[in-house]
Length: 224
Ligand SMILES: [Zn+2]
Image (cartoon, rainbow, N blue to C red; front, side):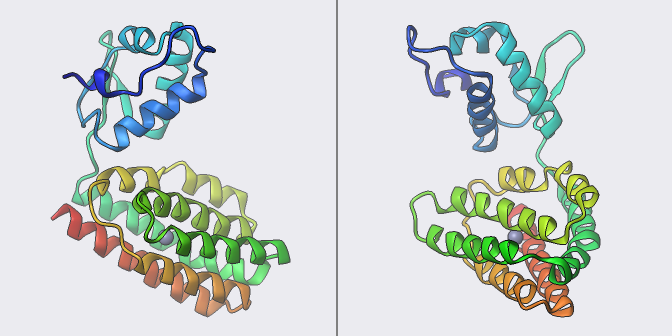
């Protein structure tokens, strides 16, 4: 059975599938390994599978290329990218350690009342994801939102965008897709959120540094 056969099918005659849905479906299939690393992706076959015109498929592939999940092969369509290796993963975490503790400190100094409310709500969402059937996916989404909230609270859009462009959560999620999720993450997030809410810059930086170092060590164990 080819990877294409395992993609969610689309009912002909129903409304036209949108570019966003094609993108979402393909992204999920790459993250969960339905399309493994170095799989060829043929835009024409995808368009037929989803019963759409080539345009939404081309748009979806361009977005996946900017996510770093596919790359264009000269005159031969696309291939899915390789998983992060140990070195790349180490580099990614080095970057995070440079950016995020300082950002958490700034967030403690600049956060608004609504940032505090959002952080508190997000930690709750993380806690309620634990124990769900798809906890790994839910916790991964919670992780993306929590870190983005810290960047937003720090009110530095340049740093926030630079971080977003690494798509680090997407790539680590793909890497550890079949790995067990850990609930420690939510406790570590809670410590970060509490320090930011309390306006304690040093504690926020420390809690973030600890969280990133622990995340790195957990992922390195998955790779080894
Ligand atoms: Zn996290």
